[in-house]
Length: 212
Image 1: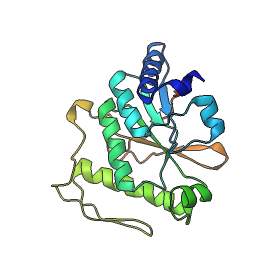
Image 2: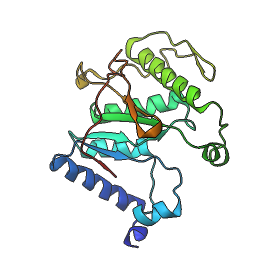
Image 3: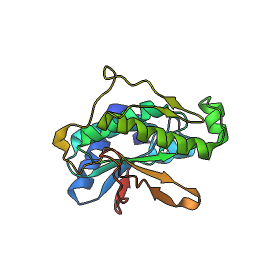
């Protein structure tokens, strides 16, 4: 009941303190969920505040120094792949390369009735969106011409005027800007292993993580 009386700003402060304490005692990572809206059973146990995960993670990045930060998981189908790529790169820059991008899908009712997104070929569409994000990151990092054309997505207009450019050099040559952990059926997880640039270096999932 006390949680319901707290303002979002207060809850954000508590989350930051939680992340800082987790870092201090040696936890490997802090993950946040992605809920535009949460069901009563969820809010009853975890409170009514469900901020945008990218914004919250950028905030936590500024309040921590070493602990890895991630999303468990970003629901990709109702996000534009270009916007998701930019948001992920921004959080990783803010965190100095500590961000892990977890990607997931949703069920038909959630996509169509809640987000007004057509539920079509969720597996192939999800896989194509991941390939599009990789192509966008490669364009920004290496200046590669963006010419992605798939069944569901097309991205071929990225001029220098609109290009955010590569990751700042202070992050170091071995730092990757987003690690994609893509959930599979039966609760198995696959880690992106493309390792083609600092945007997509593969990594293992932290063993000791907290969900805030």
